[in-house]
Image (tube, rainbow, N blue to C red; front, side, top):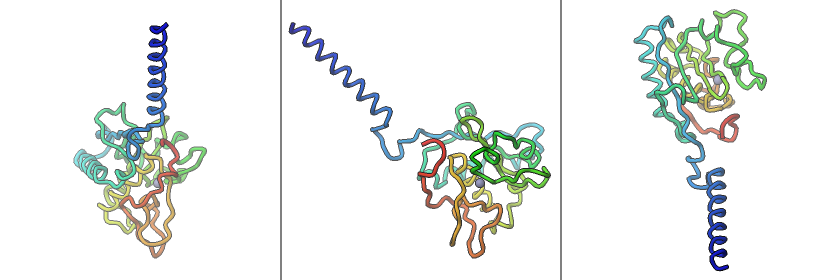
Length: 222
Ligand SMILES: [Zn+2]
């Protein structure tokens, strides 16, 4: 009898520990705060042969993107880091020509998806008029295409210098990659999720950095 009781108690303890561990893992009871979310991996694609983009320009794009993302205020809100393994990346990025961006626009892209959340790109009636960067949804992945023309010369309508525009567009599209929608701009410096490529409202200035973000409005991931 006594031995049976010991076995029973041990079994109960094992079951309790198992249940507790499962619950803690599921609800991530340990770690809280920033640890709630697993690290999001991003991958910057290399220049591809036939891209019509100069290698030097492409290298600068890679360097600047790494620089902006490593210093980005998005780190205050999410855990993310670079990976050299494209397969494990949630967010992939490339610098692309207008032509490529226009050609690749399809139903899978957020610009036309049924929830109709983002409108960085108008439906192309003339492929040449597309001058926006895009973030597309491809299954569980997000793919960002930075527009080459805007990258090279900036966008005067934004009132930002070319370098500031680059910082803006990296933070903005990466924000979409993290699952954020556009935000309104009422006064002062516009949030980075405002569409500066279209120009900012009169009396305001376009921003290039991530300011206060409401993290409860994200539409995917936790
Ligand atoms: Zn956008």
